[in-house]
Image (cartoon, rainbow, N blue to C red; front, top):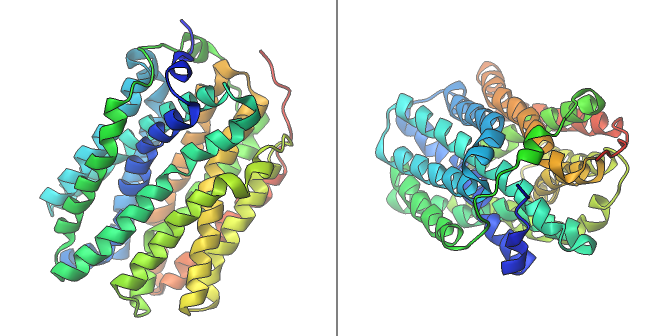
Length: 396
C-alpha cells in the first residue's frame, strides 16, 4: 500500500493542511487547554485543591500518552482520515461529558477520553500533513507550521468565549462554559468531517520502519521536559491572573494573545525550522518559550503579562513543529509516523507528570508563583538538553 499522496492531488496542500489543523484545534486548543479557563470556577464551586485540579490535567495527559501509544495501530487498522476524525469526535464527546456532570470520576473519564482522541488525531494528522507538505518541498516547513499553529485558533476562540460566559452567568456557571466550548468544537469539527482527506490508506511501510531510541535519547528527554514544563503555565496562568485581580476581560485578553501568537509562528520560525542541525532549532525555540514562562515571576503589570503571553505563545506553538522538522530532516518518510509517535509519547509522559507535581508543590507552598518558577526552570533544562542532540544520518 502507498502513503496517501492522493490527498494532495484533490486540493491545494495549504487548504488540506489547514483542514487537518482542525483536529489539534479541537483536541488541544479547546479540549485540552480551555480547561484552564474553566478551572478557577470549577475549583471554587466544587471545592477542589490545586492537586485535584492538576489531576484532571494529569489524567488528560495520561490519555494523550495512551493515544500516542496506539496511534500507529489505529492508522493501520482504520486509515489516516478515520483516525483523525475519530479522535476529534472523541474530544467533542468529552466536552459534552464535562458539561453534563460535576462528578469527579465522570470528569476524569471525560478528560481521559479527550487525551486519547487528541493524541490519535494529532499523530495521524501530523504525519499526514508532513506527507502532504512534501508535495511542495520548497514550502514544506511553512506548510507544516500551518498545522502546528492550529491549536492557537482553538485557544483564541475559547478565550473569547469562556471568560465572558463565566462572567455573564456568574459563579457556578462552569458547566454552561463547557456547553459553549462543546458547540464551538462542533463547529470546528464539521469541515474536518466534510472534506475528503484520503482513502483508507494503510501504512505498512511506516508500521514496519525501525525507529531506534538511543540516537535521539537526549532529544526525547528535551521533549519530555517541554511537556512537563509548559503545562504549569497553561494550566494555572488564568488562575494566577484572577488571583492578581484580573477579571474576564483581562483573562480573555491574555488567552487570546497566546492564541494569536500562533498565527505568526510560520513566518517567525520559517528559517529556524529549516536548520538541519540536530536539536538546534528546538533549543532556540524552547529558550524563547522559557523566557515567556518566566516573565510573570518578574511582575504583575498588564503590559508585562501581555508580553509574557506573546513571547510564550510564539515559542510554544513552534516547539512541536520543530520536532516534526527534526523528524523530516533525519528520517525517511516511512519512519515518520513511528518517529512522531515516539516524540509524542515522550511529550505525553512529561505532561502527565507535570500538572499533578506542580499542583502538589503549589498546595504545599501556597503560591502559584512557585508553579511558574518550576515551569520556567524545566523549559530551560529542555532547551539545554536539545542543544546536545546532533544530526542523524538519514537512511532509507
